[in-house]
Length: 114
Length: 114
Image (cartoon, rainbow over the protein chains, first blue to last red):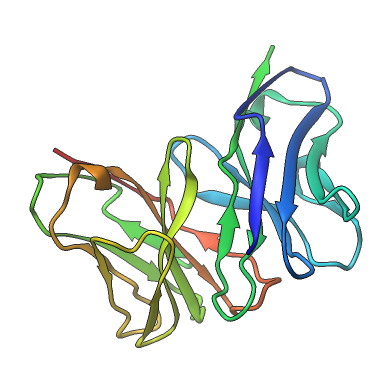
């Protein structure tokens, strides 16, 4: 069965610092992986997705993630944090088969200090 | 407006009452989903639907009922609300059920059961 583990429920960085949000997955089949962002009182918005075309995936707002099969990881990074990046971030893996749903990690709340 | 909309955005109800959360999408997406978001649990799938008149249980279906008579609507009913169903509910849709297809989320409904 597919699952996702996000390391760190809360990450705090200074404005301009590197953002690194960790995600490890478990999947019995080649995984399709996603990162979503949730701003306060809003729904989830897709940041990027991995669908096996390229291991380094670029997303919106300057974020990118690298798929590493050997480490079963799909960590999210951004070189320089901005105050507007403060939000909750969810890593997800496709459930596979005909269900079509995503299985989410528990989320990481990112705080950005001025 | 195009997209996926949920109503109401906020709802307070009493224990034992029936309450229905509405979800409407304008994309003609085949798949629709209901998730609940709770602190420490991330998002968990309640029910999903692959097409009109086709629904199936997710991870946490107990106490909920869904229907999908039209492609664009996917209401979620709590038959007899309990305090444990206090949560934020998200509806989502995706074009296809394939593993590489991302889901698009509504703004959420914050439900409080008192």
